[in-house]
Image (cartoon, rainbow over all chains, first blue to last red; front, side):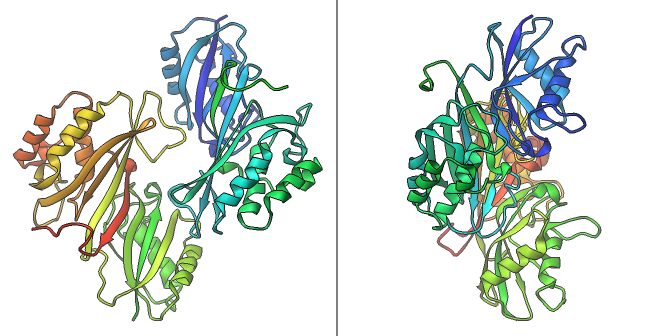
Length: 255
Length: 255
């Protein structure tokens, strides 16, 4: 059976997360239902690079699945998009993959964008795409705090208590904040992240931006290696999975 | 009675346009209702720089109104935003204005952004904010076509048949297209625009981008001075009123 790799964009606000569940709309469920139409009605099972939480968006999620028959990738993308309507999910790219390609285990880099709307008035044009923070944040201080987190660390303080990863050791390759108009964009890259890691890092850096924490407090939280020491979890709606890398060139393999 | 000037952001998709109408949600109606709460329940009448159509968004609409009493502008903005919830309208700035300030008649420049999503797959993250055009457009050719329209012209071919402006003569100060990721951004600036002018210009330039029209065809359409000669009207949802200028420094007064 041929294997396909797809790049997926979605509005996370319309779904109870990526992972299939009974009786609630999920991204996986929507794409699997669309794919079954192209598989002689046979069920299709998707695996994704990142099982994003409810409310989290993607512009570059990657998933794979097998079909009974070979379909030209451009035709496959168009057909899936046809069957996905009107759900806010789009297959932005499709490709035939190697039979052993695995979207989750073969990923060598994951890239997230977190958007903060940093102004007094609430969002109206970007509703559902940003975390609204009324107070003016000190981005320079936040970048100092971010530097503390980059590198190979035990991220237990930045990990949801329900996180199922075997090890809390991760290598954070990049964590950079920049002001873009009225927004602050936080870009985070790693081979893989713990559950809620990006959102807890953002929630923690917001404390630094408000002057409630110093970068040294971030270092102390990291060293404490317990969730209680980290900052709050930033809301899902500001987060976007923008890209997944495959191939060793993209990032260093984790030790 | 003190006069206030407000800068307004909204999601046009949630409203039947700016202008107050009975029984349908409008931006003017929503803000007037919010303002009445701050005016001892007395009705408030808003005037806006541009009465945007149904579906058209704004990040920098400007309006003015009078209140019975003086309120500190920051407090006014916060109070309006409080009463506007949960409608997707935000007062992003408020200021005390001169008693004779007029948001519509004093405006010396209006700036619009039109967003085209130029890719095969439909939008999922930017739904309702872009015009989806599947075919790859030639932005260079579109910019050549745009140059034809810049300047002082009779824009009858780029004007809705129901347009109520006395004269079709307008000075288009700027019309520039640029690729931004998968989008094409069209920026248009003028002291004032005719009804649907930006959307008809964009719909016409799309024909150029597809290779169906040449820039010379745009010139011919302009010279024909009749709506039938112009291209189709691009959808409302891609359009955003981004800024309104006041003061003679911003643009040359029209002859």
